[in-house]
Figure 1: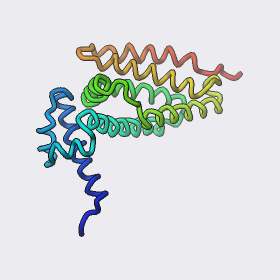
Figure 2 (figure 1 turned 90 degrees about the vertical axis):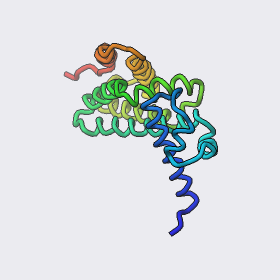
Figure 3 (figure 1 turned 135 degrees about the horizontal axis):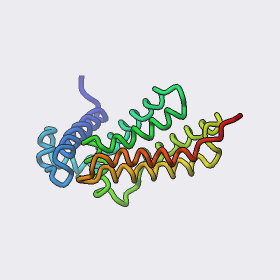
Figure 4 (figure 1 turned 120 degrees about the vertical axis):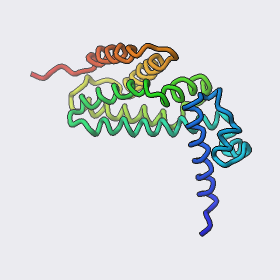
Length: 198
């Protein structure tokens, strides 16, 4: 049975992303050879340019795939907690902890920041902001946190978490940065809690 053109395109893209993710994760973006990674995928350099426009476009596709995986992991953290506030804290802690994972640290927090600066943060980023805003609104409805603009709080929290993750993932950063960031996060979020009803 012949494959459809759409499935062949998807298969080619998947092969390139897989090869690039392995190369970027092990060697870093600047050291990864386009010729080597396309050969490993069994494709040509022309295929890379056709589907991604070049190496930066391929990096953006790898980062989008990794962002989606990170989002799925974080949403599972929320689902694993019966208490919504504890789930929310665990969600934030898990995001910061990911900054010390080798592949995420190198590709998402080091290379992507250096290479993709100034590009549109994309639908994935907007979806993440909207998801957290929706969750914060639920916490407000339950009286868990103080009422304010969920979107403003989501954007503020996103900025705090992302900048902390960059700091944790810096080349040569000491491991204790994670604990320092977690402490700062706890102090910040304590101010969001609604007063106990009594």
